[in-house]
Image 1 (cartoon, helix red, strand yellow):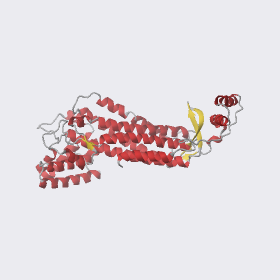
Image 2: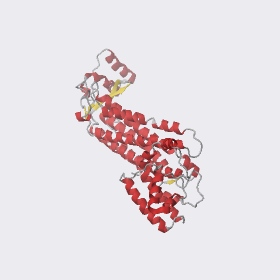
Image 3: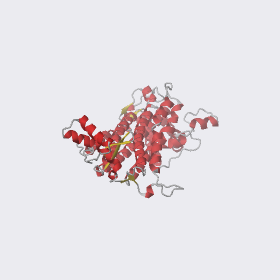
Image 4: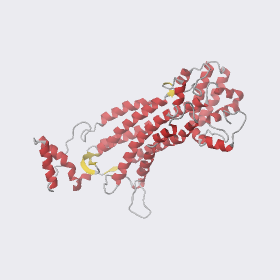
Length: 431
């Protein structure tokens, strides 16, 4: 069944090539397509295009289909082009010509647009919940280990003292910036395109504000052409947010892979959370974090892939847009899986609390000792030279005293203020 059927069937090769993965991917849209149809027919009833005795049975059947979709039981049958066609087919089988009336005043263009907006809005919120869970785990670890020192590095060289509190807390605060990106994408997605039809509106007296309210959109895409050219723009905004979260998570995974190495030995995990080698019996590999690092690196490429796919397309709908689902839908799933695994693994992380006992880390404290001399009255440049000559001559002996008190430092990681910042930011996702 095809909504555009005009009495002929396309060549099978044409249909297979143009439909692609739609039947499988559209199952993800089923719930939202049905919700959009329920709002649309309520509006049609309000403007006299659907009678009261037609609205009630249509809503009842759509409600049953919605229940089926939410249980994962909704199926797009062989020979049916997409989710929109399947919903209309099922209604027509049950209610006859009444089922054919639900498409009045809309096109598949604005129908799929509203489905995608509702889907993206929901999935951005789901990502936000995953990020928030990871944030709180990182903050908890930051508090637990805020007094446990670890080496800080620049240029991959031992630099200055850091702490596990700073390390965990740094990634927690970085997630706040990523949530800002999610909020921006959420606001772009949270606009109603329904009623824009094929991009040029309708001669029916549609009540677009009514469907906006029924579907709980923040506002409308008022201009019908703007609504249509938001296809691609919304997806790119969501992809940028996904890439931001993935960049943070991928960098953290890379740290963990390095810190698990025996040359570092900063962190470890229970044996059952690592993998082994087929030839080296001592190996305990960080495969989870290596896969996470790789997946996240792939996800950071999604905005570029979407940008190239949609670059300079002519005004109006183009079938190229269909391919965005192949890119974005799996990306959301991959990111949620990575967030879930990061939370699971961090609940079992084991920190080495005695790293700095090794004398190879003595030079971490040179800056501390320079600052100590300055506080005792020595000019900074002279203090720098004094400690530098001790290092050069092999005479340096660190005091190993740490006295960081300013906001955001080892002694004052400001986790409470970072938590407040996250609470204020994530409120924009209306979780």
